[in-house]
Length: 431
Ligand SMILES: *Cc1c(COP(=O)(O)O)cnc(C)c1O
Ligand SMILES: [Zn+2]
Figure 1 (cartoon, rainbow, N blue to C red):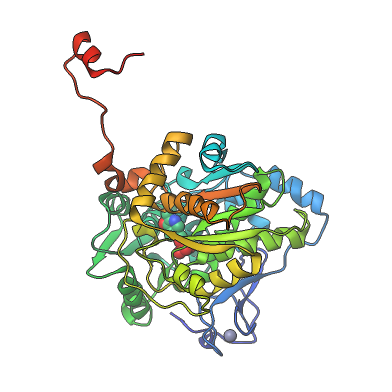
Figure 2 (cartoon, helix red, strand yellow; figure 1 turned 60 degrees about the vertical axis):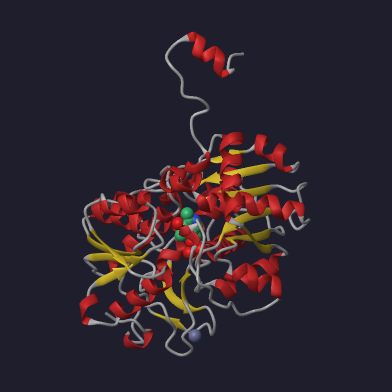
């Protein structure tokens, strides 16, 4: 299977139907290539992204079409690289998760301008990864792949397994061997093949790149490698939903977790598209990236004022974010700096505290990545980088049930008693 755009004939128009997507374009040099399973520019090796001919008609009609659409990401099909009849294909149909007005959390953090949690634990496999995989599945179908694969920090493997089962693909996914039990079981239960690799995520990713170039990987669609340009577009739906749920308005500040950095960069792309289309009013917004201290290559570069991201060897309980060599790290730096945001990190103890804070104030049980965003939000307020008087959206990208080990040692029954009233009285819990 072609890896580099060079292997696709240059002067053919794209034969595949991926709706408004018309080409791939290089993020670095702008060169265009036909739609295909390629991710790196032939000329400069820059990452490719999807280029569109977006709807140009009456914006109010587009708004009505979206609002009357399916109650999932396919309501935004006119803005995504998917065919117009996508909603009729077998897929997990993620999205339109709750945007929770988090007044009690706001009070604890001192936010007065309105605080919201975008709770993506409500997706089919309980993480934001269902969004990106749903788009990659449509690309895999268009390009004729029969096996779906990925290198994963955990959530992606589960999302690929589930989507493959629903859509009738074979799946074979790769994870670091030492992930949380919840992630491993979720990745295996859908019946595809799951391979633990003895190494870090960065080793898994390097292995997958080799597999793509080898006959062993022939006919495989790796959602986050050779299908990465399409996969990435799924994260735009977070931007679309947040704005629609706020009454078609961009929030002033958004706090986003950073693993490879794809999600953060595509949320920014989604916001810019909404402005260009006239679906929201143009206004300044600040984008903040959140990492765990034990894997903080991007926040380290941000604080040092560097443009390049130096790889790290991850050691943190936030395993879903444990990418030591993030592909989109430099773009995250650009966006944080351009919008007036920042990239910050918190240590594992702060992650656990933040998971409990969110649970106790809002009834939302986040996985460690949600602890990272809430913890970083608190830190950014304390150090004056995030303005508590402005409207702020914090992402929770996964479900606490998948990372029970993070909180289990410090969370449990208040008391264990005999079944009688005297024992209950003695426990001091009445009233
Ligand atoms: C994958 C993942 C992210 C972010 O991933 P990017 O590689 O930065 O797009 C965030 N939260 C969770 C829970 C994830 O699984
Ligand atoms: Zn290029």
